[in-house]
Image (cartoon, rainbow, N blue to C red):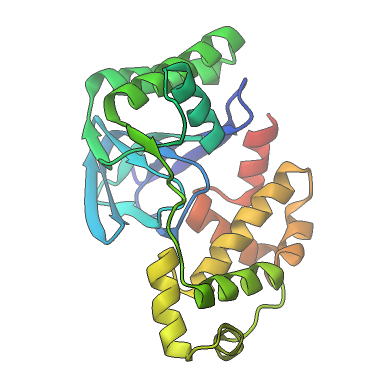
Length: 271
């Protein structure tokens, strides 16, 4: 009963929506953030996760709604672990559905992270079941229906989910990390470029982005790796291009953030 399984795949009709079905017992997600929304239905057990400064728990039948770029973790909240179905819609996908529902602009935002909604849970199960069957019409219909229901029931008035404003020194440090992905600067170099002390930069960077610079860099490398894998590059080639020492280094960090290793991710995105 302790066997862990995870199946990561692309939605059959919407390339900017990914799906994960998994059962985890000992697996722990590192602190990370997704560029997409995260809609997770807990089918059994309990997932416990740090989210925006709070410790949250989601149990059987509950739905976790995470906005893009919000740092969080993930681990078992009970000895038997948890089983869940996760949908990762890109920001533009949810914007389009919101527009069809009459929203006049902005980006949908979910104010409540863990919700009890049996009707939404049924729609999310249908979404994953139809995607697994590969029926184009049924799966596209189930996707739109589920996302529309979640928006109607749980989204706040549309606004920007990317509106956090970081101080100029922190933005300068972040830009340097993006520029030097494979040859990152030291903390002292970052601080010098930013024009502040190392400790002050650490504190300000974490406050602005939810992660210290080194963890932010790891998360950035994994997201860049996903883009390259989607473009058809092999994991061994991707590892060096994003700054990991070798493929095993990439595998370890990739699984701690995405939930599956690069090979399984690629298989699910191209199947």
